[in-house]
Length: 318
View (tube, rainbow, N blue to C red):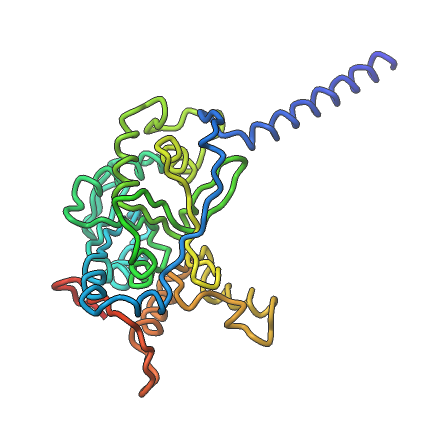
């Protein structure tokens, strides 16, 4: 009995050590070594205020509004054609160039066939393709078709930002020592950030096309690790009041959350007036969002916007 008890206690001790080891590994980011430059805390990217815009001349505002153009990288799968078709029919039309990237060929809708099933390898290939085919577009928005995006608000956020500087923007999340931008709510990359990323893709040790860690990392974390090697860090997109612009929930869910926080002022507790993305929405809900965002207008009300983002040339924009 004593021997059996001793064995049991040894088993308990070994089990506890193993659980502790798993816990430590869970907060460890493979392949990353801590250095002074890694001790980075993301800062908050904010859109310009109306006062800042009004200090610009009209020609300057027109030039800015025409200069900010966005290449949308939309990652799709043939088995969810309804989301694919909805993104193409709704917010995708507001991108200056919207390209769909698929894991395999599909006859129903046009897309770049990546011939790849691994999620990180797909994103890796799609971003390289976008970089090689972007022409003079200098901002890149990466999203799944289940995300609804208001591209004009994205353009407003980066209006005064230089795409030749490295920007990696969205809804930031921290995991251990790694800060990354949540994929579900959309990822924004400047041309310089993407250029650095494509260069580090060539280094299989720092940024392998397929992860080599014991536990497979999500593509959003793999992306952050590769960008971190190039000195590019995640930054949280916010409005001037500090409200997040990139949302991983639907409008309905955010309103419910707002009601629970402040039932007397649901709008204040919900989300930013300049929100860029919402997620977790059905195709029908996306169509309703298009109606609410682009078509429904209170007659006689003037929003006093300082500048206008014109739709892409030749698009059947709403």
